[in-house]
Image (tube, rainbow, N blue to C red):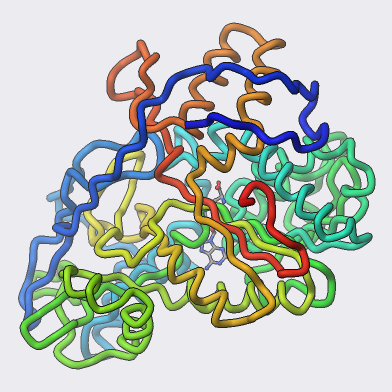
Length: 476
Ligand SMILES: C[S@@+](CC[C@H](N)C(=O)[O-])C[C@H]1O[C@@H](n2cnc3c(N)ncnc32)[C@H](O)[C@@H]1O
């Protein structure tokens, strides 16, 4: 899996250059089971059982349980009331995308808005939370691109959807010795959740400074290395005019998807409605919907042969529009973007999933209490970027294991293992497996249901760069 490592300039502490043996021998990549049976709908607005298939692939480590169902009657939450009122006043069902957007980012009660959803105590865990090595190696990528950009004196470093701020903290800490790079940075965190903005603020603030309540909610701060950090709710708010490096880790998978299902009358959009017993249910739209325009674009890109084999399709207009925005920004200001997420390099069939407390749950069950995410269609990202500007080039996707392996994760883990306790070594090995392994860790001796699951081949990395920058590391 990780067979080579680039000689990248001495970016990693201790700069080990010898070829290291693989710490583990991960099994060869295997393709993911990709269920299309979850949450299918019937025609003519009839009810369907929206229960996700137990075989659906899961891309955040440690998730493998079938959905937990709650049959106990409970009072409607504010978000459920809100969703039902939209459906009632609209006089009909809403798209899955509108449902997903409300569930995740409704300003009052969306899943991300009022709490910390990460880590073992939360609902899922992400790569930056798994190991410091992730943020450090994304830092290596960022510095390499900055070098390729001609070491500009001023750079906007933008992170989309920074979660707890852990990736940025590891990136800045590990690159703090590179004074010219650090001096050039203006960091912009694009985050819609006020709660997470506050957590990011605390993660990144000067550690030697007591931060008052007022300060911890302000829109900017400085890290220990003096890097100015600003917060925004959208990418549009980040000022234009300086070379820009954008990082999006597990951001695109949170963007709302429209779902379509093949029916006797053609491709119909799947919608969310309220049934007679007041629960949510899926129905198919009786007439064409605006999202069909995006679906047609996807079909043109994918080709008829591919489409004819599918029964379900997902399309994410927000991902297509965001990619265009990124491509245009990079084309006018210079720089590049790194997108890491779980997904495929082709049209996605039926991937939307709900995760609560590290378990799959029903997509329609108690909305707002579970994360909703969908596979990222990297092919549509490529097409959207190329369509938006002739001045950008798109590279990848490659697997996360290839990406981190080429950036030197083997060297880094070896270096860290040389100076740590037995407990830390255990955690490093587990983290390493989660980042670059494939399937269950073969060395695991603990309880089966806690075995670390590798994300190495399920997560993909793609770069969009201004052509002036040449081919970015490690996509050569
Ligand atoms: C799955 S989490 C990933 C967090 C982080 N990148 C990580 O890897 O730990 C998605 C992040 O994107 C943010 N987010 C989701 N939708 C957003 C939107 N439309 N605009 C801004 N931020 C959003 C969430 O609040 C959260 O911080």
